[in-house]
Every structure is written in structure tokens, then in C-alpha cells.
Image 1 (cartoon, rainbow, N blue to C red):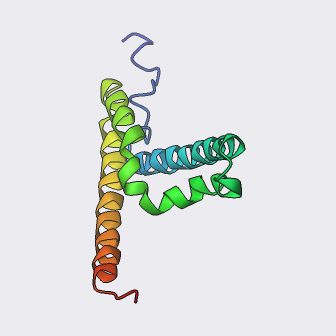
Image 2 (cartoon, rainbow, N blue to C red):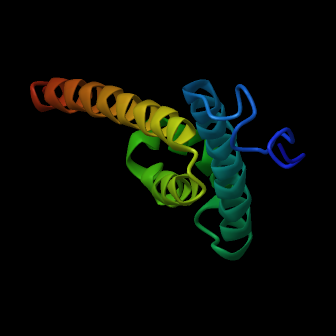
Length: 121
């Protein structure tokens, strides 16, 4: 038996390919995206006069509709994880993203339906 078989690697370490890590990866990626959106909104507020201080709040406001724009970073992460053969992490990430997308669509639908039956007169 060679010593290579006894050396743990990233793929066969216990707990390195779990669905829970996929959820954690989604949380970290979403926080990074919100911070990036806040920075971009702040930069836009400097250059666009009508935006004012509202540009810095763009990131936190974007959390309301995270189900729609999360796919911009979730899909590349899933492709990368599958290429690395981290299938359980990719599955956890995909399940988290799909559940959040479903909740987002449901809540948005309820709000839009309620606003459609409201008189603003």
C-alpha cells in the first residue's frame, strides 16, 4: 500500500462535500454580492446627481428581490463545484437558491396581487 492512499485530500476528507457547506457558500456569496452592490450604488450616487444618498442603500434593498438576481453568481458557482466533483455542495447551493427563489416569487406575487386590488384614489 502506498502512502498516497493514506493521505487525505480535499475530496475525500469527511465533511468536505456536504449540502450544509452549499448553504454556507450561498450565504457568503450573497453577503459579498450585497456589499458589491452597495459599493456600486455608492459610486453611482457620486456620479448621478438625482440618486443622492439612496445609492448606498441599493445593496440592502436588493435583498428584497435576491431570488431573481442570485442566479448571476449561483450558476457559475454550481458549474465550478461540479467540475471539482463537489456534488453535495453544489446540491446544497442549488436547493438553497431554489427555495429562496420560490419564496421570493410567492411573496412578490402576493404583494403584486394585493396592490392590484387596491385603490390609490
